[in-house]
Image (cartoon, rainbow, N blue to C red; front, side, top):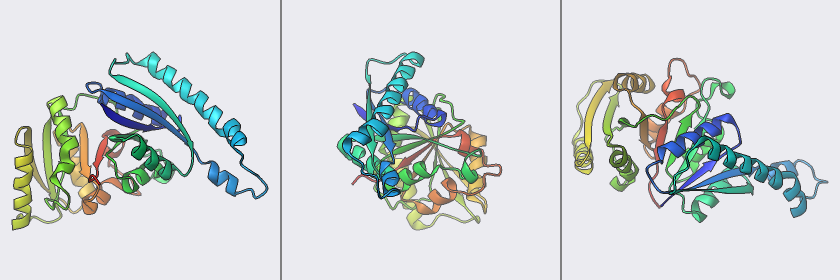
Length: 282
């Protein structure tokens, strides 16, 4: 039984992420935890004369959130044929967002966090919303970032950018192997370099480790040369018809170039293709 955390602010963007998650995990037994976090601490701190008693917090923050979560459960029940192996639970919290997510990841033994992201129409055209960006970089838990325009389709092609510099344990890649098993997907591993160059001895060794790890699955390697990594990824996604991109958060060089930008330009994969961000297990 997998435990999935679904943070929600009740926006259509977060609903799209929930919609995607239910379909993504359709073939697996799951506990889904719908979490809404009120930033009550920040509100209280702005008014020195205001005393936040438990009763006040319950009336002003918690009760309305619980009502909205109940409506969300009804919407899920109305729009999906809920599987017998899917269970839904609601969680409300008043805390700093990241601290709340960390707490529930630990207490509920969460296997994956699924969150929505805002693309070109987002605030100041920042690709990854601040909450999602913070979760990806500050919470050590596999996170599926679902862009606002992403619609679930069969995961036939899974992309995995790699610089063949394995600074993480190979078991970190298990969520990718699980997806390949469930969906019978093909893994497309892509190496991008700014100048054309051969792999060094260490990179060749790490490539062989990947070949060994995914030996029971369908996979292929691809090599691209482009001074802009994000442009190379865009070309790769379009040419291969990639349905899901996977990355390891510890590979900061690739990770930051591909996920975090202040300009969208023609980088449509940010608003169409979900990203599965992997973290090493503690």
